[in-house]
Image 1 (cartoon, rainbow, N blue to C red):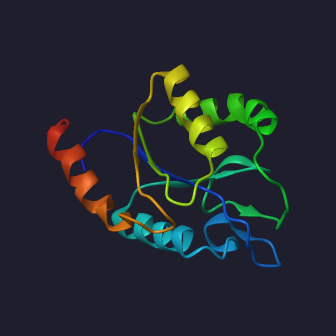
Image 2: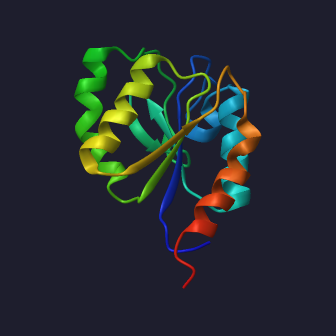
Image 3: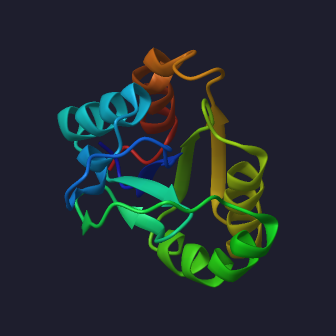
Length: 145
């Protein structure tokens, strides 16, 4: 799939399992579980923007928690989010289910690191199946070497 380093990102969810798990399985959200599964099938990294942990790889084992993203927390997490996305050329952010604070944090981090951002989705799972089309367009337009 080309030489473009792509990462798929979505925000965390409120409902969680009760024991430590990989982040992609900790959240009970159908949105997160679908994106986790599709990222594995498509071979692209998947990260979750967490109010507690910042931008974490979905395979990282984390503890359950109860924390809400606030503008203050987003400001605290910005350096970590920027550092993480510097490894990628393009962030695909599934914004369905994401509160404003999450959207603004990923937008600011991408802007400040000159990382291209594509946001899509609405509601909880709206347009979630467009991921494959987006990736096809990205890789077909990118480097063919």
